[in-house]
Image 1 (cartoon, rainbow, N blue to C red):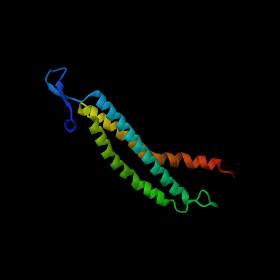
Image 2: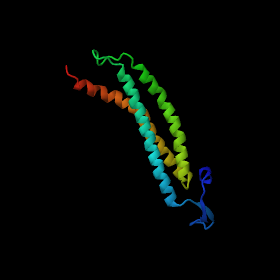
Image 3: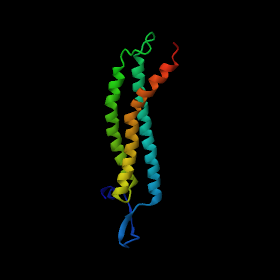
Image 4: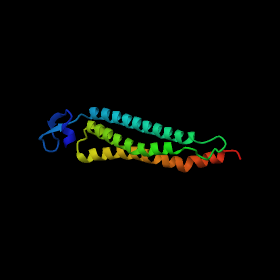
Length: 146
């Protein structure tokens, strides 16, 4: 319950026991959940822009005569390889701060909400490059005139 104590709450009597308990107003939490979703989407957008930049660096090494033979595609690959864990570490910090601010009533709900944020971001962060590698070069090869 350490994340609950960091944020100002209202002291009310608990519905079940009647003893004093901390309560976080629902409207306040809903607003923070919306802000958390917007910040999470913004982090995902920044991550996708980074991946797109890495792909552009990879594709910049292709020559006009040899469209499918990369000259220097390792720069984008290395940058992306380093970027994935960096973005993951940054987002873990952001996600914990956002979930703390939402002030969920139990640790179970808190952990569920944190896991949802981390799962969505880490899936996109980790697998975008894989999907690009699998699907995009094949599609562009089919469109190329012979």
